[in-house]
Length: 326
Image (cartoon, rainbow, N blue to C red; front, side, top):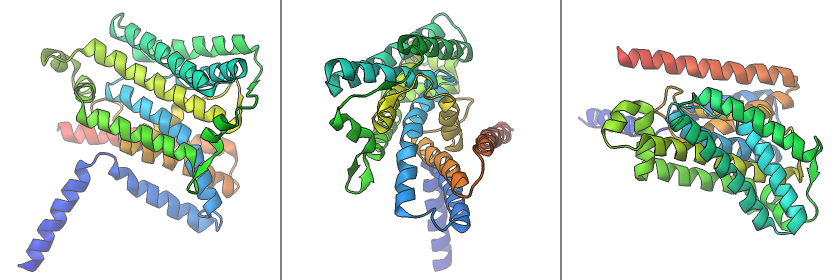
C-alpha cells in the first residue's frame, strides 16, 4: 500500500514538474555541465562560472524579448542591429550629457520606437515578420554605421555606469541580477496578466483569439515593442561591460536569442513556451561557447555547434507537435 502511495506521489510530482514551463531544459543543462567538467578541471572554477553568468546576461535578456515574439508565432531578426544602435545611442548621450540615466532612457526609448514600428507594420500592413525584421536589421545597422562613421564610440568616465556591466554584488556579477529581474517580470507578465494570456492566444490561433475578443494587432505591437525594449536593455549592459559601442556589435546575436528560446522549449510555431526555459537556454548556449574555448576548439566550430543545436531543437519540436496532433 505504501509503495502505491509513493508511486502516486512520484507521478503527481512529475506532472507538476512538467507543468512548470522550461524546467525540461534543466536536463540538457546538467548534461552540458557534466560534459565540460569531465574535459576540463578549470570549467567549474569560481572565476569561470561567474564569467559564464556574466556573458549569459546579454543572451538571456535578448532571448526574453525574442520569446515574446516567438510566442505570437513571429520572429525578430533585427535584434543584433538594435543592440548595436542602442549601445551607440547610450554611449553618445553619456559622452554628451555625463548623465547615465538620461543615456539609458534614450537607449530604451530607441528600442521601444523600433519595436512599435515593427509591430505596426506587421500587425496592420501585414508584412510578414521575417521580412519586416530582416529589413529592420539592415536599416538599423546602416544607420548605426552612418552616425558612427563606422568607428567605435568609447564611453568617457561614467564609473557608476560601468558597474552595470562590470560590477559585483555579493560576489555575483551585477548583469546576472539584471537578467534575473527581467526574467521574473517577463514570467509574471506572461502568466498573470491579460496581455500575457493574449500573447499565448495569438500564437496558438490568431483567428480564434480574435473571435474571443483578443485585440490581435495591439498584442503583436506590444510583443515586438517588448522584444526591442529587452534588446535595448541588453545593449546597455553590453556597453557597460565593454565601455565601447561598436557599430558592428551584436552581429548574429539574434541567432543566439532564437537558440536560447528554442532550447528552452519555446515552439517556433507559437503559442507554447516560456521565459524560464529561455533563461536556462541562454546559459546552455553560453556554457557551450565557453566550454569549447576552454578545451581548445576553434571559434568556427562553435558556430557549427550552435547552428546544429537550433536545428535539432526545432526538429524535436516539430516531431513532438506532429505526435500531439495525431
